[in-house]
Image (cartoon, rainbow, N blue to C red; front, side, top):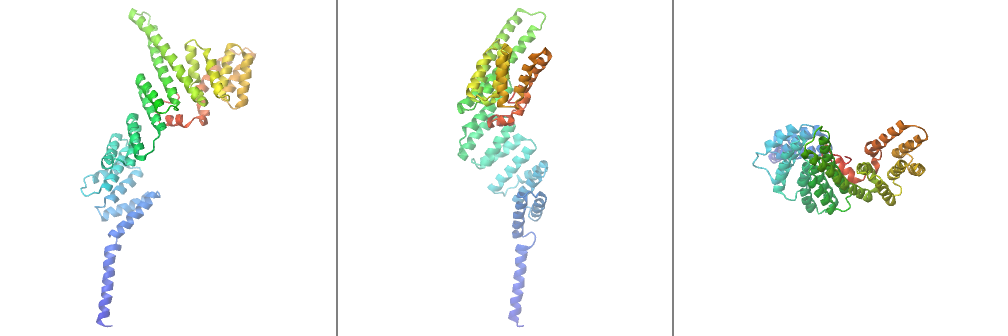
Length: 409
C-alpha cells in the first residue's frame, strides 16, 4: 500500500472521529437537539418519566440550555410537584442571556407553578409580565381571565375579556353579559344590593336575552326584604320596646314588604322569557304572594306561563294545587291528570295528585306531609331530577358560582 493511500485512509478516519465528537457523541449539540425533540414528543404523549430523563440529561450536559430547564420544571409540575418546579423556574430568572421567547415561556411556567400552589396574585403578576413583552399574547390574556375568576374578581376578569376579544377578534356580548352577572352575584353575596342590581341591569343592557338577569334581580330584592324582616322580628321579640324601636319596627316591615313586592315582577319576567325554567322561581313567587296576602295573583302568573308554554308541567301542576286550595277540586284533578299525561314521571305532578287523593278521607297529616314534600321537591330535589332542562347560561353560572352562592338560592 503506497503512502498516498495510507494518508487518505488516515484523513477519513480522523474526519469520522471529529464528526462523531462534534455531532454524535452524548452531549454534542446535535445529540442534545435530538434529545430535546424526543423529550417534547414524550411530554406531549404523556410519558412524563421518560421526558424527565431526557431533559435532565440535557441540562447535565449543557447547564446553559434554558429551554430544557423550563421543560424540566414543567414535567415536575405536571407530575404533582409545583413547589419543586417553582424552584427550578425561579433560578432561571437570574439568567442574563435569555431570549424573548424563552422569557415568555419562563413566565408562562412560573404563572402555572404559582397557580397550582394557589398563589394567584403571583400567577397574575407573571402573566402580566408576558403582556409587557407582548400585549397581544392570547395565552396570557386567557389565563389572566381564569386567575381573576378564581379570585372572584369578575370585574377585572370582564376587563381582560374585552382585551381578549379585541385581540382574537371574537365579539361575544352574551359571554360579556354572563361575566357582568357574576360581578353582580359577588356584590349580592356581600349584601351590596344596590351595586348588585346595577350590575344585573347592566348585563341585560349588554344582552337583552340574558334571562337569568331577571332571576337575580328578583333574588336581590327578596334577600334585602329578608334582612329587613329579620330586623323587624328582633324588635318584635323584645318584651319592652322604646318609641324609636317601634318606629324602626314599622320601617323594617314596610321595607320588607316593598322589596318583596319588587322581587315578584322580576321573577315573573324570568318565567316569561324562560318558561322551561319556571320551576326555579315558582316556589319563590308563591311564597312571596302568600307573605303579601296576594295569593290569588298566582293564577294570573301561572296562566301567563301556560299561554307561552302549554306543556309546562310545573306550571300546570302548581295551578292544580292552587285550584285545590280554592276548593275547586274537580278542576284541580282534571289539571293534574293532564299534567301527568304530559309527563308521567313528573315528581311534583304525582305528589300533588297524591295530595288530592287524600281528600277522599280524613287524612290531615297526609296533606301536611304532602305540602312539605311539594316545597322540598320544588326547591331542592326537583331541580336535580330535571337537570336536563337546565340551559347553558344557568349551567355556566352555577359552575362559576361565587363561593357559598348558588343559582338556586
